[in-house]
Image 1 (cartoon, rainbow, N blue to C red):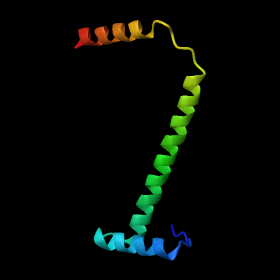
Image 2: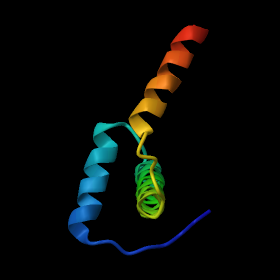
Image 3: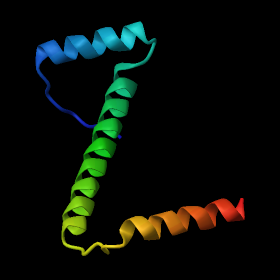
Image 4: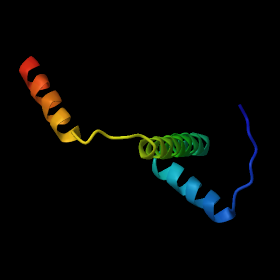
Length: 78
């Protein structure tokens, strides 16, 4: 798919230089960068949702004992 976008000249030069140094096309470098950006942005947004939810849950006062029991049970299975 073709998408037309305008970017600052200095960024365009950096992308072209990077692409040449990596023996890649400018299109593949831009596609890889956008894919990476979207992936990282999504991870951060999901992480923030998890943290927000974690703040709204109640943690057992016996959490350390429960974790220890879980570890012992996992060790017994191996």
